[in-house]
Image 1 (cartoon, rainbow, N blue to C red):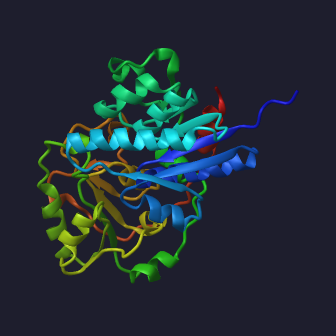
Image 2 (image 1 turned 90 degrees about the horizontal axis):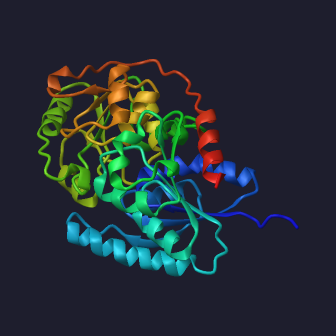
Amino acid sequence: MSAPARKVWIDLTNSPHVLFFRPVIRRLDEAGVETVVTARDFAQTLGLLERYGIAHTVIGKHGGASVSGKALGLLRRSGSLIAFGRGQGITQAVSHGSNDLAIAARTLRIHSTVIHDYEGAAGMHRINFRLASKVMMPEVIPYSAISGYGLQEAKFHPYHGLKEQVALADFEFDDSVYAELGLDRDRPIVVLRPPATMSLYHRGIENTVFDDVLARLLDSDAQVVLLPRTPEQAEAFADAPGVIIPERPVDGPSLVWAADAVISAGGTMNREAAVLGVPTWTTFAGELGAVDRELVEQGRLRVLSDANEIEIAKRAPAEPAFEAVADEVTQEILRT
């Protein structure tokens, strides 16, 4: 008797997850594994899915900035995912930090894998570390850093490399990004991303460096591409003179590749830039995670405390090669 066909359920709750799972989905497809994708309406998640032609079902939206709103959003979306997943013949579920999917998969008795790359997301870890069948994290994060969240060591599976290397495994530069954003490739390009003010890991952190950075850049010859996280941020910066705000989701990796500097208070885009060799500064005012500390030690990520430290100059890009990292992560996802 042949083994039952595998069907992997992937839940995407934020924009970076689209880029992370895009090469994984391709590898699963090549291995003959069926995938079904659900997505939360948040940030540029849906726009990126459309851009890359990834079939998906939209379920739920972000619960907002308050803890009560997040809790209500978690309950509602988890219930919707349970209803969606029942009777689908799904054999495995995987996400990058989706508490919603962890709850749904546990309820439906589906083997689930949760992937993380930041040990400080306590609210998320206390839920999905306990509920998931397997937890995958970059090897630079030791088990001791997350053992206090109720994670059994037998469920902990570190992988070589970083999340961003998985996302960039199949990267091909699309130079249409210059025309799409009206950029002059002969002048310095700086990509700027505001703090993630709706995230729990930014709660209670005052970040004053970002405004100084924007003022410094606008006083230079650099072309500033600002990537807002929310409609509210887009509206707040809409009238900033000389700032380019994309009207629709752009090919993020190609934009980062074209940039001469990336400055952000977030994590994913900074790490993408760092592994691609782009000069990168973080304005995050909280405690850096193990992955970011490793990149700082390697000199690929710099902590910015003064806007005058920014160096702006044209650079010569180098080709990335991260296929092996995506291969390993895909194989580990399939291992139950």
